[in-house]
Image 1 (tube, rainbow, N blue to C red):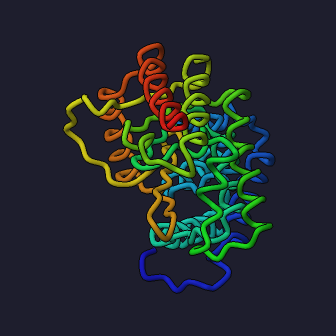
Image 2 (image 1 turned 180 degrees about the horizontal axis):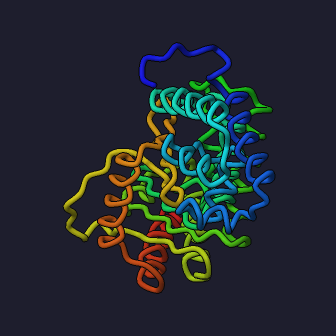
Length: 290
């Protein structure tokens, strides 16, 4: 199929939705539940659901298996495989520019809600899902970005929605930051003290959220220079200074899962993390008293 001509209709969100709808309707015709379809295709029910809701772009091999399970006729199967291949080629080179910040935050909220496990790392800032409203405002209200006031407010609210998701739902979160990210003095000492205290509260609460801190005294052997989020074993979102890339290749995802595993070995969690957070918060409080 490589080298086949690509029509403009084989790219973009509408084409992705068309593939999702075709697979959903094919499962309906086959009279299979999501669980039974997943078992037959060697996938989880969650993955079937995400594919059908256009939250996850299936690989060509995924589409081959689903076509087999749903007994899709050869002519339609060929069209779906070509469509999947075209969309994967587009996705492999796609970079989502981080200018529509509120829309991107909403998209992240959708990804998180659909995932069983979200693993996140941020080397320089507080992770978005943990941010207070005041901290987020400092991040988004940057005159260099030329973002409108309405867009800033929408982005702040979208990020707060991600924060609320930590308290509800079935998604498990593992959130890791080095101590240096908490030392990046955003806004004011008062804002930072409240921010660190909020993280400590979430870390102490536990539940579906694990907060990991890598203290500055911990020697390290890995050196990730950018933020990233891993959604199950389906996708990785990587942040750069000017853009955000969504990676769906199996090799890329495996690389980031392995990297996150090494970061988990370096981080402390639970009561030990809370102790470090309380120490850092107190140092910010000392700055406010000067």
